Length: 387
Image 1 (tube, helix red, strand yellow):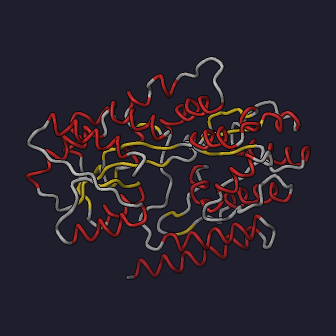
Image 2: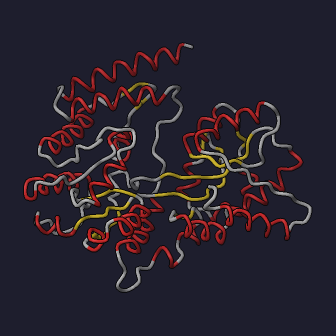
Image 3: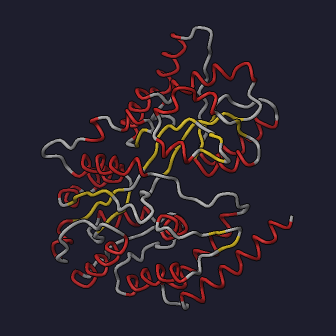
């Protein structure tokens, strides 16, 4: 968060301490990649922070390992003010493990010139249309249409209503899963998918570069990305329009990623009422709104999320303003999609991504590639269960 949000958090702390003279708040900023280690060390040493900033998969893992305290009692009467979808994301085993702070969600930015050249009449309304339009763009303009984040294929499967694991077993080789990968393979073969870094852990830099260079028809990205197009590629920005990303058959928005504040285990019980009071203040409507405007993210409180800033498009607005309201439309449908409860999940996911890559690029039959990955997953999952 430092240095960009230092004034925001320091002012917030100063205001809180002024209204609560018996309370001292210290804000400590850590880079994302060391937070988990620091937190575990502090909890084990018996000196946990009062609150910690986490994402949902980490909260799920820490809650499972007994390293977080449920916050249902501390949420109190503030509970109904948070968006229901954000509390659902933080509820594990019937208990809630955090104070939702903000989320992100994807919108579709599209190049209206490329759409016109390809005779596409409107923004895509579902994944099938995204892929169809991508093939059409390739056929009629020779450019790529879409750059999906295929290293996160598990999230895409879940958003499309296809389970990755069921009853402790991998099931991503069903006819429906195979059909999905085949559609991607057909689109790849037709030149509809941007080939740059398509299967990289993070292919977003390649996707936004291609879009800014006029080589990509559609960009699925958070609204902040549209601001980057505005500052880096004014000519492309001028012909960019924006639409909400399709929800998929599950009714879940694309690109949801919730950030929240959790209470670690072993926080002094006498401090808990004060911790809860501060957490409610930290994530109240006014503070969430102020942070979300600065950070170009979405508040997790209903009133703040429905603020005119997010919901209205001023007349003559450019794509950046439209992106904010397009994302706001999806925000109540935003969920963090991930597979819960699996040890070494990242390693397993790499096997899945390799299989999808082999199938999409035509190196291997799709069914055969997925069957092999499922066999590896199930062997490893069975070994985990027997420990």
